[in-house]
Image (tube, rainbow, N blue to C red; front, side, top):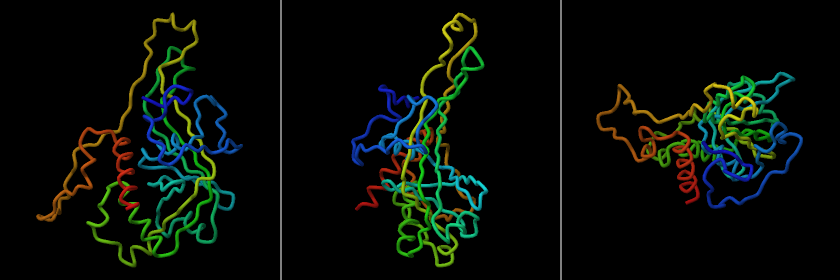
Length: 258
């Protein structure tokens, strides 16, 4: 389990700095206050955690009432996108103007069992990103976003499936948010007890947690001429989901940039 940014291990093995090594400034909104040594404001660290995630939570306030919505999402450079029904509460509010939003992602990598109750913890990789969320309304830009959404998870699949008709496109809303501020926070080590507690005869350690790809399940009404496409090549049984999503995002980005 990786994730220590304190001069030791990064959230993922370091990539080439294709998207630059810039960092977001530390502000009152994104500053990591508790255990600041676990934090990072560097774009590559933050992007790696985002790109390995299947879902996120988006928080916002409407007329003073806070809401937090789980949804799937994707990233293009420093912009985050998610979709929803045109009838949803958040999307109706966005129809008027953009709203401040906070998008979060968290990967749980292990449960940390210490010798004392106080030092029990989890190993994790997390991101908080802040910005202003806006609806994507131009038809051409919306169509491009829908294509990017499918290909982000299954590279190349969009061209092989039925395209959205006018009614389906109308019923789907795409939201975009440019990241204005962001920070990552991680933990990736064994229990750290008080020195005196190491003498206690109590088992301590880490229970690793992974989400793995399972065996695919055929649709009961599968067309007899239908065959699995190359868009599923990454989704092999036993592979880690976060690794698959990271590779899928990279392949989708290459396809988008062609």
